[in-house]
Image (cartoon, rainbow, N blue to C red; front, side, top):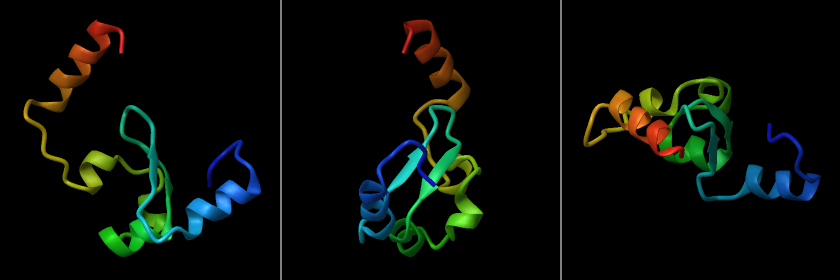
Amino acid sequence: MLPNVSIDFRELVEFASDAIIVRRPDGEILFWNAGAERLYGWSASHAVGRDSHELLFTRFPRPLQEINESLAAAGT
């Protein structure tokens, strides 16, 4: 569920045919719509609260820890 958004916006993203995923900077999935369910095969109840990098098998050019440290050092 998307916090602090209007009902119209919430309905729009929940029922959009495109995959819409909302996550925290640390990768925790906060929202996963029906389009994401169709595209990735995971239900929202399975995806929300999980780490997007682990769930979607994200591949990084450098270790994720190193990327996060660089972002923190840059103040991003």
